[in-house]
Image (cartoon, rainbow, N blue to C red; front, side):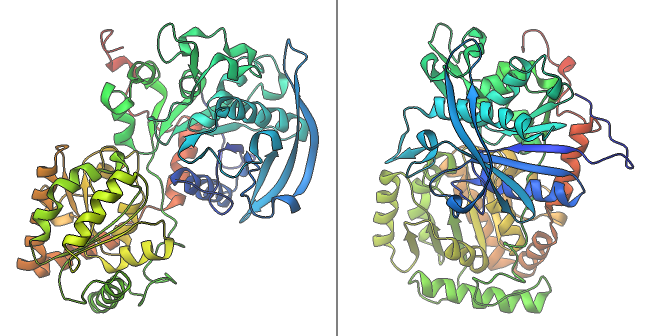
Length: 507
C-alpha cells in the first residue's frame, strides 16, 4: 500500500475502527489508543472519524445525534439487520456509534461474570460490516481504514472481497494494529452468517479441520499493512512463542509488518498537573525531592502502611499471568525481609488475589494489597513509589512503565514487547539508564533486579536521583506516534523486517 500525499495536497480521510474508546467506554489500553491517536492525527490536519458500537454503557448514548437509520443487507441472502448511526464527539473527533440493540444493548461490552457473550463472533462480524456499510451511506470516503485487534479484523477482509469492485472504496487501503495477539477472535462458522464470503476461506481457520475461523487471522491476511504497538512486539510476532501460534501468518506479511510505540497522554499523566496526587512536582532536584516525599507519605497513609522513609515499590495491574504475578509471588516474602514497602493495586484472578491477600496479612507493615480498579489511587502509586514493577510475561506496548518514567518512578520490567523499547537498563547503559530490565521468565531473575534496585537506592542515592531525572526527561508524545503512523500510511516508514530475509523454512 502506498498513499502519497504531498504537503500541499488535501488531508487524508481516516476511519478509525475500534471496539472501545476512552472517554466513552473502556476496558483496556486499546481504548486509550482509540482516543489519543485519532486526536493527534486530527491535530496534524487530517479528517479523522472514529466508529465504535453503541453499548449501553456509553454515556449520553440516547441523546446522540442520529445520522442514519438503515439496514445491513447480506449478499446472496435475504437476511438483513436494522441499525442506526448516532454521532458523539470525543474532544474534537467525531465518533460514529453503531446502534444495534440486539447486539450491543447489554450490561457489559464483551462478557459477564468472566464468560464471554456466546454470540461475540456474530456481534463483531456485524460491527465490521456495518462500519463499511455506514461510510458509503454517509458519503465519507476514507483513504485509510485503520482497524484494531480481532473485533475489527473482518473489515480488511470485506474491503478485499465484498467491496473489491465497489468504486466507492476503490482507493481505500486498510491497516490493522495488533494490541494483543493472544486474543484471536475465533468463532464457529455459524457465527458468520452475515459474512457468507468468509466461510469459503478455510485457510483462516485457527486449526486444520476445525469448524471455526479467526477474525484476527482474517485481518492480518487481508490488511494492506499490519502494525504492532511497539517494534520489539512486532519482531516477537514473527516467533511461535511471541505470536501465540500465529507466527506463520505474521511471517507471510513481514514485508508490511510495522511496529510503532504508543504515545502517552501527558494531559492525564503528568506530575506537574495531576489533580490526584498530594503535591505536584517538576523534574528539577528540589521540586522532585519534595514532591516525591509528600506523595510517598500520602500513598502510605492511603494504604495503611507506616510512614517510614523506606523505598516503596508500586504495581498497578490486572491480576493475570500476563502481568507476571506468577514471577512475583514466589519471591515476594523473601524481598519483604528487607527494609522496604510494596503496594499492589489490581483485580482479576481470585486465586492470585487470595495469595496476595495472605502475604499482606503476614507483612501488614510492609505489603499493602488493594483489590480494586482505582484510577485516582493508581496515580498516587505512580507518584508516591520509588520503583514500579512490571514483570510481564508478555507486554505488546505497556503504558504504566511510560507513566512511571514521567513521575520519576524507576520501572523494573521484563525485557519483552514495548517494555524493552521504552526502558533503558541501569546495568547495560548506565549513563542514560531509566530503569531496570531482566530477561529470564523466572522469579529469581525478578528478585535479582529488585535487590539490585534496592542497593542503588540505599548505597548510591545520587545515582538513583540521576536516573530519576533521566526517566522524567523521556517523552512519548502522541504527536510523534501520529507522524510515524502517517509515514506508514504513505509508505515512507520501513517495515520491521524485510520479507526477503526470511528463509523458506522460516515461513
